[in-house]
Length: 462
Image 1 (tube, one colour):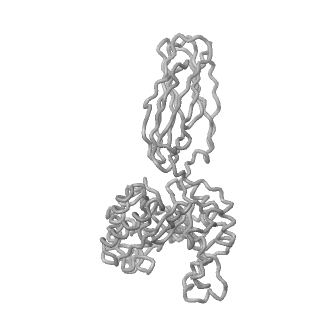
Image 2: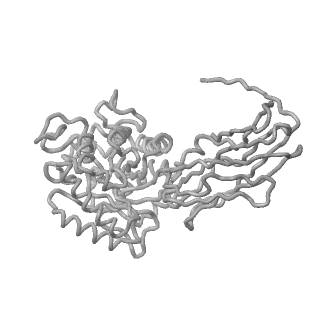
Image 3: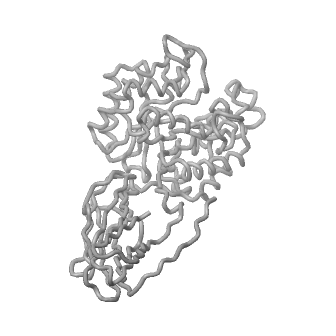
């Protein structure tokens, strides 16, 4: 809300001040914050654009000649078998060779596991953090514009036991929440732009609450809320979470279900229509409820079309290509985060009304200036010179990080004005080049009346 304060320099008289601004729906006031992405087998798949997504995730490489038409997240393989020098060399080499072709790097994959897709030996969060920080330093040294995302943590559920002093650890894998706490204690917050997590839905709908009922062990899409709660509790509430993998496993043919790779997975199966409904609902839920969520990457777009995977390979059945999910995601209303800075001025006009005989009167109003984009901006506000009202503006310039806002005080004094309407304007502009919604002009109006009557509206509460 804009606030209005009126100061009288003369005798106390009846005064009513009004501030006009255009109401905005809650949806319009919600800053876009999501990236719409797929893990892809074919980086040049035309399906990404046809569905309307704007990110892809690739593995250890990315299309560069020509570069992808989409934003690109590259996963760098990092395991406990690599020395820190090897991690540095790999990270630096990829960042240098892919400069201008990718936007972000994910450092490793599921490092709280010792499986072949994870850390590949009993995981220790401090060791992974050392590798993360080594990669972060090299990547940022190539370009500060690269985003560095920590490896997507695997949802393990609550793990009992204590392995070599690590709680929630059974010697093979560690509870992702305990692993994250140990990462943060080891300094990971200084070496990432966002925390990676894999909020797979398993067999629950997208909106199932975590840690109770059907999701008692956190095996559901909204289990990521517990990750962000831990981030808030440990000083990382200002960082985003990126869902670098998530999805639902569609039902395979009956003859596949008896294959060894499906052992332990059958309970996760959903129908193809449920897969479609849950994926679409996941984006809608995150958009409406999680301002801290950034990139969301479905696993996967098209592994089911890749001829190098055998028919019963379970990864094929997370794929959405040629399934109802492809249509559902195409129809999904997307509100992607803007890749530019985006100037937002809340309100379309400022106005006040005073009584003529109360003058001199000082009027103070407020504008809220924000940045709804993905990069910082510098703004400048000026009052129209020579207008009937030329307010002072405090401050009249500033810098806003992505997602930040600032209040601008607007103040003028009226003395000896006759009955009538007086106008002015404030223009807010922003840099750098490419900033959207700049400049913006906000009309200012003052009405000097013979007498102002108070009208009181009832207040109701739900």
